[in-house]
Length: 114
Image (tube, rainbow, N blue to C red):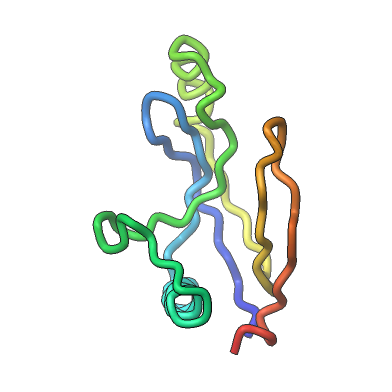
């Protein structure tokens, strides 16, 4: 059930987050729908804001650790830069922030999610 993921440029959630856009393809939509169903069904986990905002797949490259001035400088650098890259997603990873950085807690190959 692996599928290609297409990175298509830079975007932001102003004023503190810069990210790489991920093209929203049918396989990615299906993956998100299956994950949402699995979390709700198996673990009774449902996002408090589920349905409140659209699915916006992205790869965060700068988060809230940017000051407003640094965000403005970084966004001026990234906003016009082209980026086109593709890779194959073969699973998901559960991450946990330890106060300093993100750590992988578990990996889930797609074949185990079906």
